[in-house]
Length: 562
Image (cartoon, rainbow, N blue to C red; front, side, top):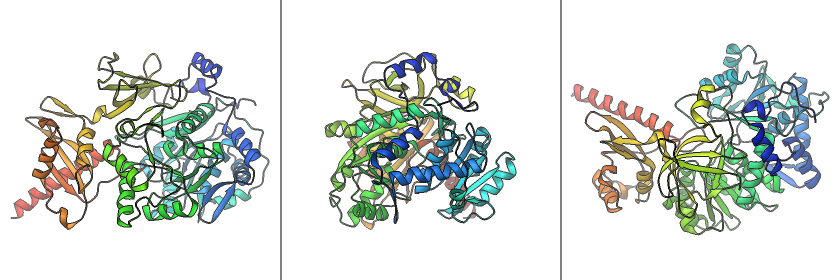
């Protein structure tokens, strides 16, 4: 294969040549791309079912064929190797056709999430100099076509809009598949840019994370080995397909690698997902804690405890998974739970299905790849002893070495010896397991003491009647910050007596230090989630702090009226 002259490759994206050579020599980086993978899968599995989406079934051969038709359509529009496009689609089989079709041409998608809106999508379009925007007509009541019109008005270089569904003045996905043109020779090499994932930061526009073919496939391969997927795997996709976790940890890509079946769910809504699990004998799925809580609640309401005989494992990730939620999920669904920690920038660590329950409930296990490295450091950057909490830094064959066109972020995020500063607080236990303690910037500084919110949150959710909890730090003249706990409660009459005093006594009884006990509790019916559906603490705390001040203003206004 020839290197595309306009395509970005590993060296262009911050990977040092000696590191590239080492990973190739050690077999972590293989001579493979998404294109060679899809051809190999089609040859190996042929007419075996690969994807189920509603009443539609696609075989591996079908998936290759529709990807080639999509590639031909994109080529007919003038897209070529080295171009970038923004992809924002709901969970659907067309997403896979787009991903593999773009890959065939050497075009890199920016993997936007359905919940992103104009500020983010416009920023992605500008940063990537996108030539096209690919979206659905509507989803969850939002019309993406109107946003497309605004995008084209702001970005003259955005030449094409491709729409799944009613396209209006734009190109419909169905028509795209009918465009006939010759596909150019495969321009993609294993070290070429595959796609841009998005950083988890929410205080500013997410950064573009460049992932290349061979390292992303390395991540998927080792995730498969750690999870135990094989040809019998039937994987239910509940989370946004564009996110790293359901896409490749091991998720969609790992299932395809094994010759398994992907079952598409548009959302993690429990009733729909339960029907899909029953209908298709689903063996594995992945959830974030808020979705897992809803699944557990609904299963109990329907009296469906342990009525999913084919379900082997549920992965839980997205924020720290508490012992209570892990145990409850296992008890209700009668399957194993994997505690997973990972990020779009790289490292994935997970418990193994053979581990004892203590490790599954209290740790994030071990990194998936032997070449993964992580270290825990203090404020000066020196490594700390096992059992000591510090900042988590990572490096490995699928952990990036730079963000795309963000030199200031690169200077802040990467060490001189190539480790990525994750911004997470963690510890390494004496048994080698990783334990994620929270985010460095999420710590609350109260009267000189540092409080990790997730420690308190994980205790609060063990109290009957509490579904979830989020701690925020509120400015205080005397203490610097005081602690306010937003508590998501069950809406049941017998729990109406839940109050501050009860929860304070409960936390004290559980052994929490007095300075960690929230100064104030606010009981709410729901806690907002982020684009991926997870409790991203940065975004949640920003939203809840706004709510906190709105409540204060309303109370002050009412007092003046009285």
